[in-house]
Amino acid sequence: MTATNPRPLTTNSFAPGGYDGPPLPDPLPPSHGEPLLDPVTGEREPIKYVPAGSQMIPMTAAQIADLVRLHQPPAPQTAPTTGIDRTAQRLAAGGILAAGAGWGVGEALNAAAGLGTGGLIALAALATAWKIGPAMGRKTINNITNTTTVTSTNNSRWFGKSTTSTTTTNTHK
Image 1 (cartoon, rainbow, N blue to C red):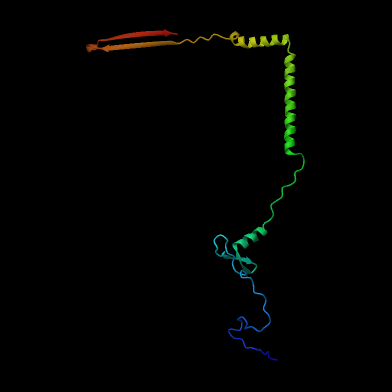
Image 2 (image 1 turned 45 degrees about the vertical axis):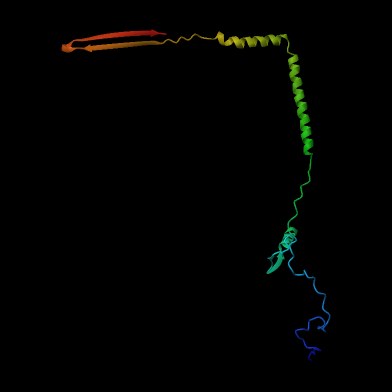
């Protein structure tokens, strides 16, 4: 069986009004398959090829950025806090510190109030002994320095005549 074509195809067969075949689908929008224009510069975005399995897919930089953003893991969630709040812990610790300091100061003042006349006399005697103590046990140390200087002078003359003079000096400190 042979198919018969009611009209032979020519170069003008697809011109408006020249096609007699089944109806064609609506034409694609003018931007289909075309690179997008950059809104700032008005130029086309460069196409980059991205590997996908054994194929390379053409994509624009904006599409690649969207693809990367979609495949990033979500930001980690902070773990819920358990136990006592940190601020509450600091406030409680500050209160305990203030109570301990107040109790310690009260104990010191109570001890000072209980110090009687006998305690003050003992304290005065201790201070006096501390001041006088070094003078009581002091020993006398004498440093004596003796210096002796001897000067000899020898004069020799002709025919075996010579004279000698000696001077000695003692110093005591």
